[in-house]
Image (cartoon, rainbow, N blue to C red; front, side):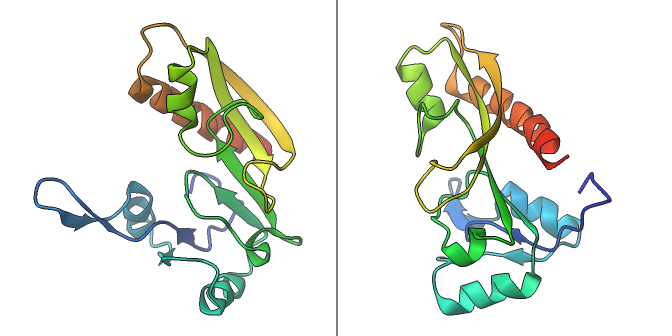
Length: 162
């Protein structure tokens, strides 16, 4: 949204989920920001059905950015001419897959970081375009590391897109 030279054609996010004490459906923060900006929001349960792939194809994106999406993407979402990038919360190849922040802390790692990588069919296995590191000290919590990596990820993604 902060790069006027890029047209944000849609946002994909997980379907609304029950949250809080009342277990009321809650929109993700990504959805709330996109809706406030007037950006179309898609929330398919799965992206593999032909209907979901056709909806995605109709947007005709040049660039796809993935961050903590949680679903494997089919070739129609990631193959050229689309450039599909993932913002991953570890210094790949360490801590591929889910929960890289928690795994780094549990392992006693002294550093972590962000990897901006090309999305391929195998989980977190594409070529890494750039990495940015940050320290982890013995008192760093998962929440603190998450917040640090979120900010670092935004900067790294901006650099990768440039």
